[in-house]
Amino acid sequence: MSEENTTRIYTVNLAKAWDTPKYRRTDRVINIIKEFTRRHMQTNKVKIDQDLNRHIWSRGKKNPPRKIILRMIKEDDDTVVVSSFIEEKGSELSEESVEVEEPKMQEEKKVEEEPKMQEEKKVEKEPKDKSK
Image (cartoon, rainbow, N blue to C red; front, top):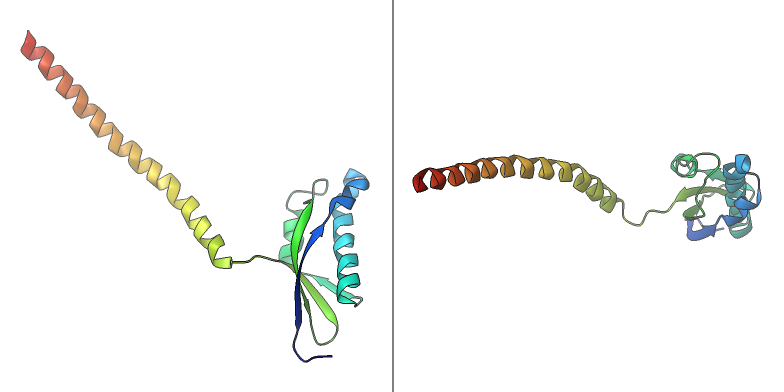
């Protein structure tokens, strides 16, 4: 074979897992991924990445994802490492930072709104006093 690692990206439909009982669905998803990898990468040595495993199990044993995008890397010793495919890792970090910044902005707006309201009340009181 070639010296370079072969990398392929697939979208795998995991809906077959819903034919099994609820308490076995995520186990079935793991088996579906392994079967798919064996068929498309033509090897029996399959390793599932820890992050992919956590993603599959993140919703519990009874409610795994319906489909998933996978990156399959075939190494020199015919071992295939399966991981979840994320196109841009930098974009995830920026999304997290935006989520953190949003609550701060809301707090600042509340702080700014309170003094304005107090000033408006003062302004309203003054004309009433002058009119008397």
